[in-house]
Length: 96
Image (cartoon, rainbow, N blue to C red; front, side, top):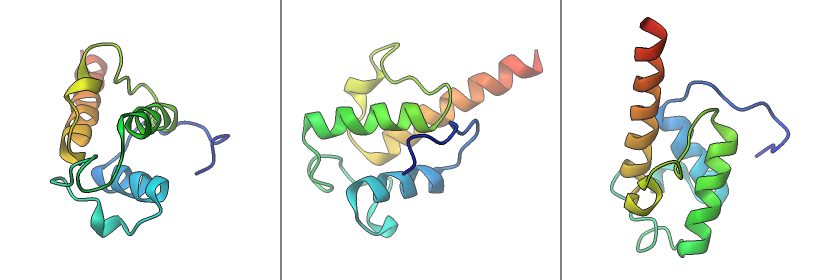
């Protein structure tokens, strides 16, 4: 992960899974939508917080803390859905 790189404007679920796998140092096949951040991937609350902040830095405009989303993310699929919802909001605003 290059923290000096420009944030990505668009992303897909595989990029997010790959980013999480790199953060954890595991194979991306372990990072499934059903993988629980704590129980399956071994992230305590502080690791989860750090991961969310790193994702915000990596992917432009993603904000887990503007609302209560951060507390509702328990599995990888929750995280990806939050980002996809964010992308859909951007697309709607751009089309208007």
